Length: 469
Image 1 (tube, rainbow, N blue to C red):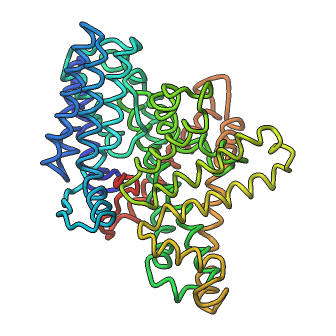
Image 2: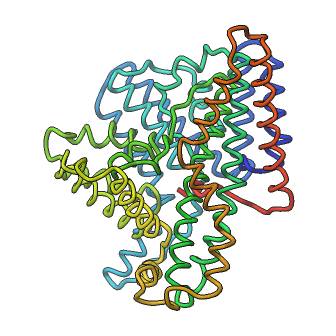
């Protein structure tokens, strides 16, 4: 099941909210959330529900053992089992394919379907076990409560990666106030609109260019497709994170932010501080710092982190190249230090975005042969020339979407909202300005939901891009 689905929007979520607020005790509320979360995951993959429960059970069990005696052996076993399951389901086929190619053998390549969200819930469960061993969180003695943490449906499939310490106190003691529900609904509606009104439309044009024969594409068309994919992946993933954070507020949970306007960054380092923040911080705290961080072997530690970051996104060589690509530029920025700031801010931003867009080209093409061909077309070394009549039509048709997406990637929408809030603000909560602002906010939410619903009617399956990671 996906959030951008009419069944979820008008059946699953309303039923879950109704059941949640009808019961009084926190124990009953948690039971409602757990049942709906398990149904949510089992909707598309009932068999792999058992895998998720098994991952939760393993880490809960080792957490209990570590609570009694903090033996490193228990931690090692937990890490091996977690990463072993991830390796089998996500990387087994990739490893066998490369062994066959390297040693000219013909071992049977296992065909294992990738469980949705396995990378996210494995990271979450593993972070709990490590934090228990470090003494940073208390042992959760209730398996039901721990399974709720691992399986909570708002962030189960595509993050953000929520560590146990982020919501430890909220599992058994939280309060949902009317203003939090309102904020959660607004955040959810914005995220839904990002997905179905921007990401999906950008993706349609992008795929029509990037998925077809590349030899017939012009250089300008390839850049158009790549820029639209750059917008698609941002609005798709940040939209999901907005919806997850919004639903978290509805149920009293405070999830960490996952995006902070990454396309306004003025360096690659800044970009990765703003993009997929929960993943970057996970690798920082559980890989980079334990390896030595900035204290020793800094460049080697960065190389390991970016190899893992690339592989985390998928079992394909293009993701390894993608990780290496960003490692190179992050290393260059690290070595140059403050000298980068001598470059004018506008040029730093444009250069950063050019590098990011090229990086998304590596990310997009899992077939290395097509990846090489795409670069040749992008830089005018192949394809059907720089421009043709069809390219002109495509660019003209895409201009309104490009303009809206560009504005949507900046702080302009937030600034407009703040200005409207300031204009309508009054000291009295029942004043005319406050009433006007509240009414406009509700109309804005209803308009986004209505437009998103219209866009969803008649469409087929439109999964989030990060489901496959």
